[in-house]
Image (cartoon, rainbow, N blue to C red; front, side, top):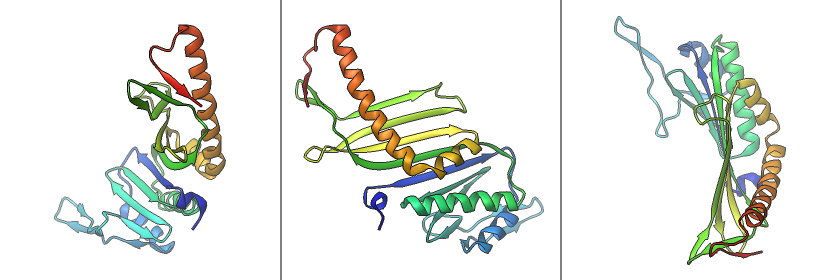
Length: 214
């Protein structure tokens, strides 16, 4: 078991298409890569697609991870960093080789745990245990958000969640360097929160009942 698996890692990668993909060709390519793929049936003259899914709702599965299908969207989910990177790469390969690569945009959501050296903030018995920052408008196709939430007081352990939405080439590049990206985000949030608390105190000149302990 890798460190990131033991540290609560979950990776979710979604690609959204302009048009309906060729599910038969896509499923065939996944089967060729060793995935157990859901059976696809055509029903009636309209060509309605019926896909019997397994208990988890997966369209395809392999020990690397599971791939889910929604209209014009494919999602791969894995709880191991290395397997997630491999499964994401195989999903993109199957999309390319099946001629289904008319992608609108892609999304990446990654959650993992880290010990962070952050000050504790309290007011009237309430503890500040979470923080979220983002850039670009919420409805933009290029959007990034980072959230942290404290999950263990004694160990000062935090759950970090990063979310990226943008062109699939950019998202795929992030996935390929995900370990360094996770380290970079943990360092960034530590510096950001400490700088934010310092600047806020200097601007206001008072703590408004807040108690800070290092």
